[in-house]
Amino acid sequence: MSRLVHKEVGGIQVAGFSLAGEESVVVLPELNVCFDVGRAPREVIPIDTVCLSHGHMDHAAGVAYYLSQRTFVGIAPGRIIVHKSLAGALQQLMGIWADIEGHPSPGKIVGVDPLEDVALRRDLLVRAFETNHSAGALGFTLIERRHKLKPEFHGKSGPQLVALKRDGVQIEASVEVPLLTYSGDTAVGPFLGYEFVQKSRVVLLECTFFDRDHLSRARAGRHIHVNDLPRVLAEIPDSQVLLTHVTRRIDLRRAKRILERVIEREDLDRVCFLMERPPRVDRNRSVKPAVLGPEGAAPTFVDSGGE
Image 1 (cartoon, one colour):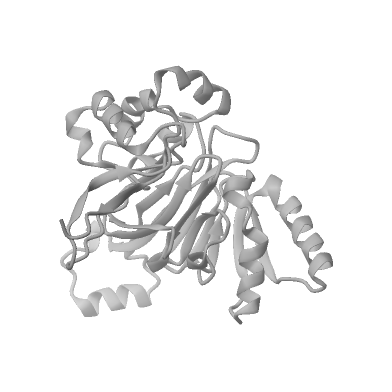
Image 2: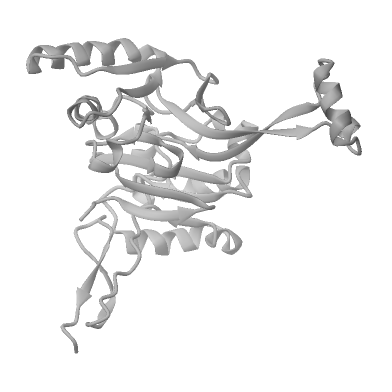
């Protein structure tokens, strides 16, 4: 069974796994893009573009495997989008793997600067932005490009519009619609002031620490603590928020209780945890309420054996 958790948020299909220090990977299968690669689970291999937030092993370990497996199964070479300062090191890494394996694994490594756009398809782009974590750390926003008729041409007939276009008149304006933002690992930072972040339909936001005595850990590691969430949520008032990168130092059930005390009641309905799996119901057996497995792991369910 896949270890990824599958959710639909804001009309967008998301499959992901994110535990602090272990693995982070988020796949958007319908949009053909992945944020971070983790250990390259099988769901990542068919995805053409991986946006790598930074170089820490729990986010980037599977880069070489991802590119190699695409060649192995006969898929066109993949593309890795990463901060320009890390692109050379990734290319060196792939060169070393070519020496080890005895053949190269084709793939395109695209180094970008903050606020640089990369087209994913004609009507969809990904925009990188600088985050507050390690050197070369980026977040990413998926933005849909739509074209709308300019107000001054409203009421014109079809033939009139065609004639205007034939004469070289620009009758449409391009409109950007932010779909989803992925923060990667980050502390609170200036990126929250970007309009395309604030207007994103969905925000995947790291929130690593929840215990009060872990606030110093959050600050030292440049991570978000649950106490930061009221400020962050105020900056993205209309977004559905998926919390990622929770540490195993706290179990998910207690993290939810703390969250309920920290954020406003009206925000609870739009905030949830990526790693919270929905109940699995076997129609032939009854299922008891959720209990937590290993500390920090997603909830598991106890089979009552028909009691």
